[in-house]
Amino acid sequence: MKLGRLNHVGVATPSIEKSLEIYRTMFGAEPHGEPFDLPAQGVRVCFVDTPNSQIELIEPLGDNSPILKFLEKNPAGGQHHVCFEVPDIDAAKADLEANGARVLGEPRIGAHGTPIFFVHPGDMGGVLVEIMESPER
Image (cartoon, rainbow, N blue to C red; front, side):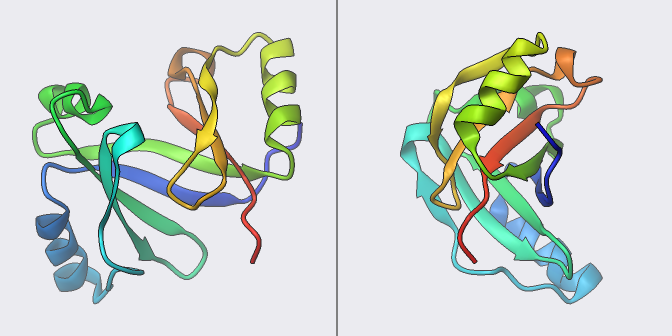
C-alpha cells in the first residue's frame, strides 16, 4: 500500500459551534457546510476547508460516542486523528493487516460518504490513523 493524499485532520471538540468561531476569528475560515450527525459512529461533524486539505471538527453524539473518552482526557478537545486516502479500501486493509497493523473494526461509511477504517495508534507511532477510499472529485 502506498500512502495517499492527506484528506483531513480530525479535531475532537466539546462544541462544533465554539470551534467554528475560533476558526472564523483566527483564520477567517468558514465551514464547508452545515454540521451533520453520523449516528452510526456516535459523532456530529463539520468540515472546514484549507487550501490543501480539511479540518474535521468532531463532537460527541450521545452517551456512547467514542469521542467522549478522548474529551475526558482532553476537556478542551484537540487533534484526534489524521486521515489518508487510498484507491482501494479493501486492499489497504489487507496490506496493513499483513504488515501487523491492528485495524479497528471493519470498513464502514464515513463522513465523506466513502468507506473508512481506523488503525490503532500503537501501530502508527502513537497517531490514530483513518484510512478512507478516495472520494470521486
